[in-house]
Image (tube, rainbow, N blue to C red; front, top):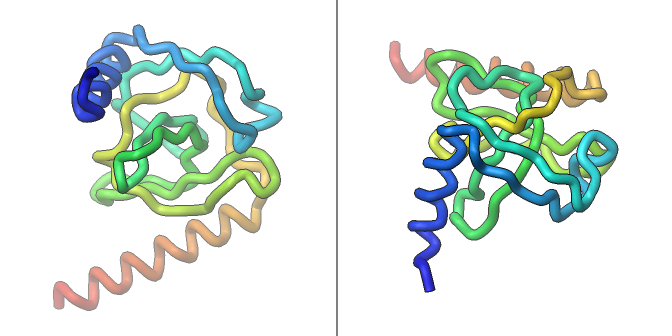
Length: 134
């Protein structure tokens, strides 16, 4: 049996080469990605809002495929959500958790309310960080 940490390392290596293919197991990304769809994961470099990324949960138990709603240079985290109504999120995760970017079209999340939540949340975090620096 291969330890889970080695599985993650192998997944990161294959994604960096664009050679990782996964099978979608849930419905959180429907209708963009249906359960059972095959998705190729490539390098994580240059992730932007609208991209779909594969990342590990904070407890390192699961892998999640969600759309990036908010990320910015200089921030160590990103906000993600599923495409399906009630598909999970919005939630925040560390950029270190990203394994790779899915090779699917980039698009903005459907819900403008979700986008407003993300931008509002980011502004609060940035203000809090700024007040701690001064």
